[in-house]
Length: 92
Image (cartoon, rainbow, N blue to C red; front, side, top):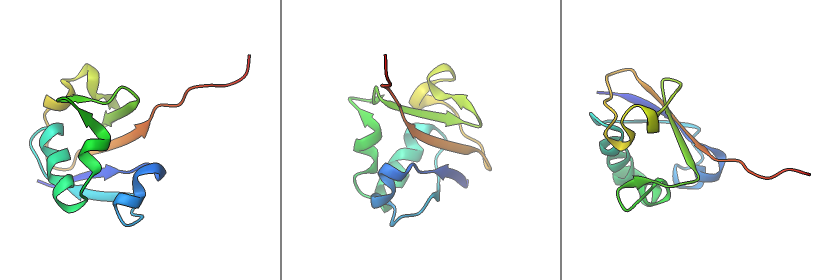
């Protein structure tokens, strides 16, 4: 099952500068484990203690995975997953 994963600039050093990679898995958690096999260190940048890191947003076909099962969100062939670091700050 091929899943397209869009990688943010800050993590591209782990994917040989690839903006988009393919992975496999029936859940988001399995997908991240699969990616970590080819791109060591990526899973630890996304997951902490079995949960998505607080400042990482992950979208499954434009839906925030936190609202559709988190790491247990089900994937199907052809899904798109987008990883985005959370942005904070600004001026007062």
